[in-house]
Image 1: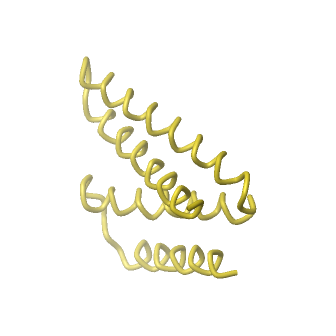
Image 2: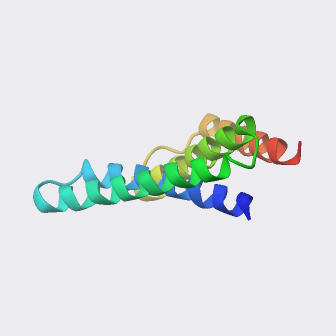
Length: 106
């Protein structure tokens, strides 16, 4: 169950970076709504991270959480914010995914 919560925490990290990306493209009331989403996802992500770290090793929890957030944020950037897709970006994202899997298995 804790691994599921950790994955959800990582996805919430992707959620707050998505909200931050959308907020920078808006203004006025819409900006405040995206910042509200950013704050909600941030609190949820940190709360789940703290809960999971009570039972799983912190040396595993934190890198997996940041890895899910990093990979998800790069993918959101590519697919939703039209960021460039280069060989090196894909190569390093792949190595990051391999490292996350390695941490889970060890």
